[in-house]
Image (cartoon, rainbow, N blue to C red):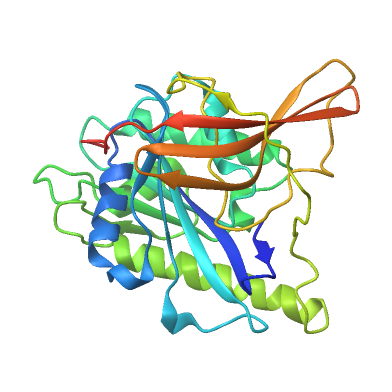
Length: 291
């Protein structure tokens, strides 16, 4: 769900690149980042250990205009390579405003692509939604290979109703078009929500909570311990349903900051109706080499 930062007059929206391991998700993000003008996008960042590494950056397209006087900043996320803990993808997809599904068009990629699509649908259903209700694009990466499966054949075999675009992280075919379509769909949804709210943005969440700093320092997290960077602005992680008493829930609160290779963020731990907050400092890995 898009989040409002009223202090900056910004709406922050999340687009997730989802796909099978080695389908080229992070390679596509690197291509996009390299094609955008520096003044309109933030730096590429990674958070995580050797497995389940989050790869992300933000972009504010100037040509899209504003929603009720608020600029829209898009945050693009993926998880690099093999995912050891399924909870990682659940965390990344939570509150997604749009999804770009990266199918592997290589001859040996179909089985992994099908499992990945099933996993995507299951996670989204777990949040009470359906993939078909989200801004969604399917791109068929590695379409530049001489023996690649065609995008239409992949779409039909997977049972995807939406159109599928041939795509290549090498040549750049298709990826900017797919991103542009998802971005425009998210903008339309935000403006529709604005109209239904009577010209405001009351449907968006905003956080005005204070956080406490307990200065907890951690090593680079292994799988199952990776913290999800938040948007560049206040957001709400409180007020959502909490599990039964004794069943702890971990969530990210506030604005993570990155200085050099150090990322600092605030975590909330809730159980039995009580909450404690901690400041977590994580050393970032060098930039990933493959998607």
